[in-house]
Length: 382
Image (cartoon, rainbow, N blue to C red; front, top):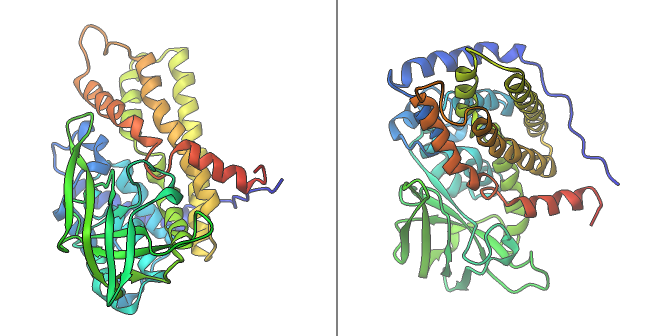
């Protein structure tokens, strides 16, 4: 059985100044009335002005070359910024996908024309992306994707549907995972295309979630023509490329900080009279959080060294999901009906927000079953 290495995470000392700068910025940029409920919506908080301000500070496109308006800073420096944004519950949805995974994918596999067309806008916080992976009937099983991009004269003709496409209705582009040819194995014959969502034939329909919010969408392609220049990388190499992209999607602190606002609220309401059970539960959560943080920072170090942390990222995502879904259940057991005779409104609102979002934590970025299959293969168990 093969071991999966997690190198010791880098030290904190070199990044203290940057961390202090981000905290100072957030203290000024987030409005005075920014509540715990707002912080719990961080991933779904779509605020273009906030994203532009981050771009102006040089905190988007941090690892991109200066030739594309990036800042040539390290993945570890970017990690510090992302961690502070999520811990504060900042509204990151507008730029999130573009900065986290679309930009590095296009940098590594895209054409020079694609890089110059989209990377400066991502770094400025003005160009937004959505993910074209999941489909009806396939979900996290990307190898079952059926959306086709038939090669035709001058480009590709696309037909198919993508599902659960976060903020497609506000995005400028999608990176589409699709089939461009036949293959003997499930992973072959796939490619990635850069799709301008204003292209004729692209239809975006809302999906309203359990909380009554609109961030999911269905995106249908009906005989959509895109030019040959839309191809990212090499035709037929889509599986390898998308696995590289998923390493960025699964490895960051977003995979264990989605419920952080509730954890903070839980500690606040328990602070007045913590009993033994509460101390034990919160201590256990804190310990798990620290371990995940060390593992995730280790992956940032691997990226800085040019290594491929796809397997390690999968482990962090799976373990992070377990923690995120555990937090509202522990909060429910420790604070079943508010505090004393009066319910604590901030706690209750934050709890309700995280509880309704928690079922999605083990779906986005790959279901638990899919992830554990990947881990098992990495361990030589299948």
